[in-house]
Length: 441
Image: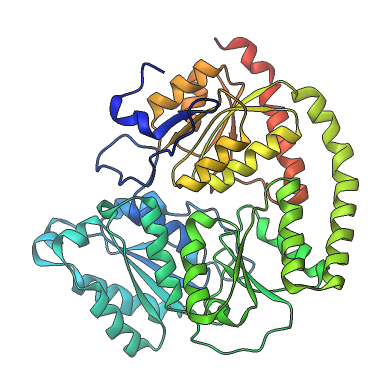
């Protein structure tokens, strides 16, 4: 890998070489060609799926358009989150301040839409001019009688992961502000964003086990459920990169323990069900979980055998947001006979990368917070047949002439759970085996 820049070498490793910690969690340099998004974007994508809240972006219109509908999160009820509101700050507002513009916007929008809460996002320009968003939110909360929460997330103050933390702190202001009774076996799901209706698949699994899901934070989320989230017995954290901070705060203040799980792939999905049953120390729940897993595997494994036979020996490159998701992808690909040759993430930590080094085959390239030039070079070097990534990685794959599998926020195909594993196998097969690649150099 002689083509790697000197300052990037500590963020790249090859499995089988000297085991070392990979540098990660670095602040993204403003204007750099990085695949990682900014602090504001990190906060926005976490909070966006709260469907009955008002989301208003205090900044230029570009910030609102960049993050509008980026999660693709479905709602079973209200869809206020689908509307993207902005104060549309201009040059005059930079000089004289934009706080009055924000005040008028909040006053009008809250009266018109009657939200259960409002999130007000500060962007880079607000961090520069110094509008006192926190004070205005406190004032509007008293006037309107709903929680109005300032999300202080100027994009230049860190990385996307810092935005996750800021979003968790905003959500934590809601937690514990309502008291409602809950059933004996009650959990919260943290970090599932109901992409393509995945949450509804998971809710059905837990319902069959006899588990009540009190709050989904934040997919198909409701403000009142989040306010009552402290009454659950357990937090089940799906996307640990985005939600682990909230889980830790709830454990410290409300003594709600948490489990890290993944709902992607057969092995991790089954473990997610078993681990919840183990937590409650209930033979009844465990028996229900075993029955559910047996039924699902009996249906799924025969269907997967065709895809495994066709895909065995194919090579995949993975570059996604969270490292926990990347780990699940390696396991899922292995189940259908594919080998991972490149794996990277935007927000992984040192422990995540250590686990990846243990899990992957020798010569697998591991990369943190990569860029298009690096990713293109890695994919070519390893002769990958498939690239799994998000919206920013799709052009890289297509320019190289490589099959691409979308694992990003706005996808339309559910990939969680047992049905999701079959959908994933079908998508990978259709992409890798497409005859179009015969006509591309």
